[in-house]
Amino acid sequence: MAEAALDGLLLSPAEIDTVVGATGMAVAGTSTSLAEDITVPPDAPEEKKACVGIAGTAEAQAYAGSGSTAVRDQALRAPNDSGATLSAGQAVVLFPTADEAATFFAESAQKWPLCRGYNAGGSPVTVGDVSSDNGMLVTSITIQSEDEPTLCERALTMKNNIVIDVSTCGGSSDSAVRIADQIAARVPGE
Image: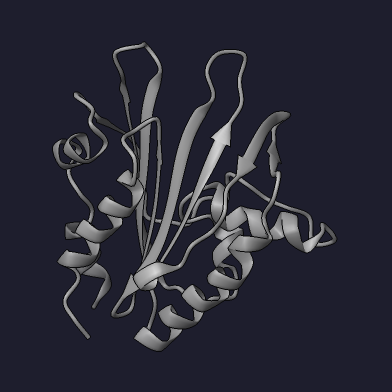
């Protein structure tokens, strides 16, 4: 696939609504470059470096040196019935070849399980077990707060020369996986 095709891969806000069980998901931000929201010093323990790939979609430090050439990244938000915010992040990352995308996926499959008890900005964050069934990396993240804890999900998969990187918070179970599957269905086969 070429970079021009990336724009048609992401789901619409209405499609995200259906998957996460929300009404009124709206785009909160879009980017055509890797995010630099999270950085870990080079001398940090490997466990903390591994957490960058889980902490957010299309994080620059997670993709550093991977050979990726383009990205489309989108954040969406909607209030739910309890007043809490539902959120979703969806990104597609282009690699020159399917082999390079597969290498990034395989390296992520080794790194993600290293992340345990990640603490971001003083908020206790617990990363769950990582599974890699059917070519999809999946984990849960629980963010403790004074109110009710927030459950987030992360999913990473690849198809052809595209890595699909998805996060959801506060949505229905397996919503990140379902978003990733729907995006993968739009990517032409190898």
